[in-house]
Amino acid sequence: MTKEIKISVALLVIGLGVIGGLYLNKKSNKSVKESKISMQDSSDKKIILPDFDDNITEISEVKEYIKDLKNIYKQGKSTLPLDSSELDSKGEIAQDIALNSKEFLNDTKDNRGRILHNDIMRVMPAISSMLGDKDKKICNNSNCYIVEKYNFVTNSTKRAIIDVNSKKVVSIKKYPNMQPDISNRLTKIAKAIALKSPKIIKELGHTPTPNELSMANVRTSLKESPCEDKNHLCVAPTFADHKKEMALWAIIDLTSLKLAAAKWAGLGKTYTPACIDERSLQNRYIMENFCQKDNTLKRDGWNFIYHLTGSDGLEIRDIKYKGKKVARSLKIVDWHVAYKGYGADKLDTSTPSIVEGRQIEFVKGENNEYTFGYNDAMGCPMFSTSVVLAFNAPQIKPIKKDGKEIGFYILQDFRNPKWPMACNYRYQNKFEFYKDGSFRVVGINLGRGCSNKAIYRPVMRLDMDTQDNKEQFSTYQNGNWNLWQQEKEYQSTSSEELYKNLYLYKFNSSTNLKDGYYIEPNRGQFNDKSRGDNERVFVTKFKENEGDEDLLTLGSCCKLQLDGVEQYLNNEPINGKNLVIWYVPKMQNDDRAGHEYCWSDSDIDENGNPIVKLYPCIVGPKFIPISEVQKWKN
Image (cartoon, rainbow, N blue to C red; front, side, top):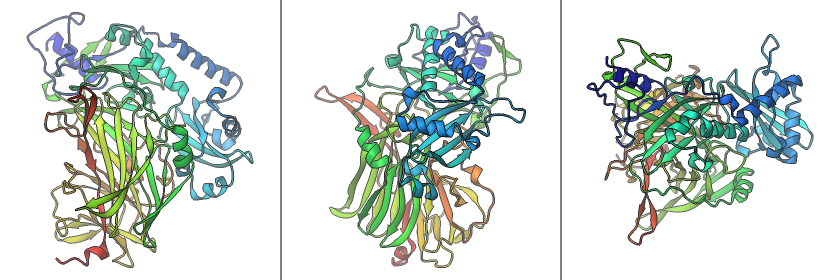
């Protein structure tokens, strides 16, 4: 094994993995310092490890943070609060009430009385989607705030609902192994580490400015880096160099307060300018009208409530068609984004590889691949650190066919502020409602992401209803409907036999078989240039704390066989119970000329003006009433 191959292996394993093909030059035998990697060659990808002597704790923002923690502990307190500059007057009251609640703080020390690292991450006015039915009854007549705390040691989040008027705790819920949106304080620390780390400065060739940085608060998980440990809170600030068509990912481990790794990756061809003016959002209008209150829509026989959530996008609730119950809640709770790397079969790991004093353990992934990435949440434009924010208000427009109106849709746009620049994202939540009682839940990805090797998985939570809440779910197999008896999952092959050549799933009442829906998975038949859903479907028994309110991030972005819903599968009986369907499509982007998919790019039109070309990928199932299908002739 040559020295350069050893170095390539070691660099490959640490950090983000390979995005694209890996080609090893076995003829050369250069030293580490002499080895050069071309930033223009998409087959060469460079991974960077911080030096042992990189003293991140000397960065002023980190020093100040550590100092604040120590001062809190000296005072006998266990949780670092948000600074008053981040809070309004009612938010300060809510935070104080939460920090004096024994129940809220009962996980801040271990069984030996030692203080565990806890931060308040968010204090914000209560959003309807985050409240349970009992909480809503109280908060509808009062001023309620939400206080979220993260425990760095147990990797868990607590959310307290505070009635500011009565100065009481309404409710407290704990979310084990789940991470909240990070605070402004930690966002600033992540930016400071990325901007001031010696390795980052060396790689960029200059001291970067804050304007060069994006995605500082995007949570991430990386193969073979400290951030692969799901118990570490990590984010991925990114520097995009559009001239070189490359991006430098700085992986910041906020649990250990350090640069974990960095990675150069290709952006793909782009004409996107170096900067775009910040989008103009009427944030307060959106917050007051669509986040802090429910809206009711009645049209074409349909009647439902809709609102924007803190992290689960646009939610449609309490849906009825001609007075009959259809669904309690429809929403897309997450977008999982994974980047693939190839080349494991080319690596010789027969002898140890050492880089900067570290021995590298090489672990091959499935199908000769490496993966890295993060989870995206879509949310309200204020009181949220999510970077994919609501853009304008929900849009309601008619659906037409052959010039006739056959229904309507409601659509919400979510964008990174600098989309369509590389390493920025744009998603749309779309719900289509038809005059015949059918409907479709649609997830749309408009790119662009950080690479042309991305896999996207939107997690749809579909809490359906029948009139008696005694429900059942079936799949069509071998010419018959197979009734599910327990909670489980099903991975579609996309080539199964379909009932009436359309339907693979069925949801209906266990006491009235006509009360329900046939479910038509997307196989590219909806005339939207889709390449299909390639879906995994889960069915679980309804539980309020499993997504009826806003969910924190589910599962891993990059373990492609796990969607996060698995944690809710307890093999419980479901026939005749109140059920929730989780529908998770999977698609891969494509930037090949003439074949673009899940992609967007900037270009110049014939008048010399900048335009954005869109190549959306559109996924999601359609629900058709059983009674309607039975009217049709075979």
